[in-house]
Length: 264
Image (cartoon, rainbow, N blue to C red):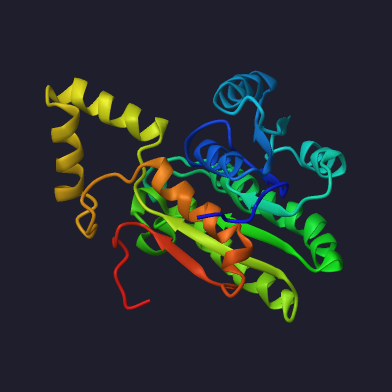
C-alpha cells in the first residue's frame, strides 16, 4: 500500500533506537524526508549511519536535543525546518515504589515526556494549520491506562500525552491537520531485550521462558501474550501519519495487544 508520504518532512523525537528508530525506517521506506533525534551527536551519528546503509538514497538527517533542558528545546524549534509531520516519541522512565520516588524524578519525566511535545506542537501546529495539512502524533503507552504502581510517574506522563493530543485536535476543526495519540503495549525494544537477558541470567531460565512468565505473571491482561515488535508498532504509526488516515482525529489508538481491555 502506498501511504502517499513521499517527500513529506517528518521529525521524530527520541528516534535513535526502539520504536522511534523503527518508525524512521518505516517512513523512509515510504519516501518521506526523515529527521531523527537523540540526546547526543554520537547517538545521532550512529543512527544515521544505520539508516543510510539501509536507505542509501533516502533523505535523512538528525538533530541532537536534550528535552530536559529548556534552552536546548528552544534551539531545536528554531533550527528545524518546516514540518509536515511531528511525532512526539521521546520518553524516559524510572521504576520505583511510589513512596521512594523523589519530586525531581516526577519533574524530569514530565519535562521530557510531556513538555517536549507541548513545546514542539506549540511551535509547529500553527504552521500546519496555515498550510492546511499536517500530522501530529503523541506516542503514549498502555501504561496510560494500566498505571503500574512502580511506574506511577511515567504513567502520569503518558496519560497527559493522550489528553494533550485530544485537546490539540479540537484546534484543527475543518482543516487538513490531525492530532492523535498511539498507545503501544509491551514492545521488544532494546530496553526490553536487555530486561529479558538480565532476568534470564539471574534466574537461569531462557529468554523465551522469561518472556512467557512476564505475560503469565505481570502483564496478564495481554491478549497477544508476547512482546510486540518495534516494526509492528512503527507500521501503525506510519499509517496514521498518512493522508490515508485523514478521517482519524483526536483519537487514542491502541497497539497494545488487548492489554488495556474495555470496549473502546
